[in-house]
Length: 289
Ligand code: ARG
Image 1 (tube, rainbow, N blue to C red):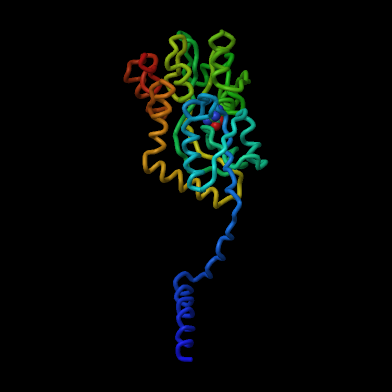
Image 2: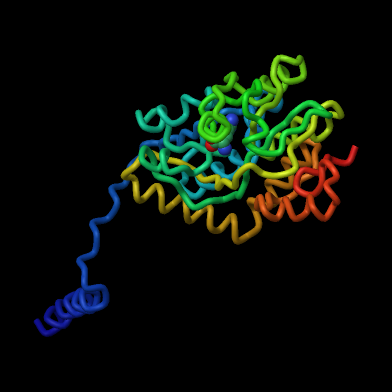
């Protein structure tokens, strides 16, 4: 009798301590499932080195390294889907993919449609033109034949800032081929793919200033706070542990061009001014040839 009374008392005081400790009832235990974990479907457009590019029939790059770490943390296998860039946002909105990582710039318009993680990279857009025909700002590009990747911030910049309806391509590389063939005067593209395209090409030149600064983040359909928190947690530990930078350095080296962190437009002008107006100064210096 005595024994069972004190036996009863222990769990009661333990429950009480728990209640005092957290002020909230414990959540019910997660149901145990024998189902295999659901794949985490990442959507991208694999023509954007070093963030995503094809190698031996496989999509590789910084964004894939980041998403693999997120999937590992979630205990889910990663599935990478590559599609046209302009299809990425509709796919997320319709629930056909879980996350997008595509050197995707955070913009106010996109924030209306999607949620974004922490930023994991700072970037910006530039012009590429044929050597000897250089363009330095939106005003100088007015009235020119311009190529962009469809649906990108370069596309938006061309329409809104330059005031030109561009020729649209599926990949920046295709736009560059049209430029080299003389069908365009310039293309607009993010700085890293620009270095990949023009860094080792003597016939092309990258504008000496970033046209604007941008932040890259991972996007997901709105209203998924748990997934967003896991993405941010994985990103934070990768950023703090230098893993994003290491992945960038590895893929840049692999794509064979020099990497310099994006500087602000004013820093880039200061550098260009220091170099006495020499073309290709500072930010967009050519890769060592
Ligand atoms: N940063 C630009 C944007 O978000 C271009 C991204 C292109 N990405 C790609 N994987 N092709 O609009």
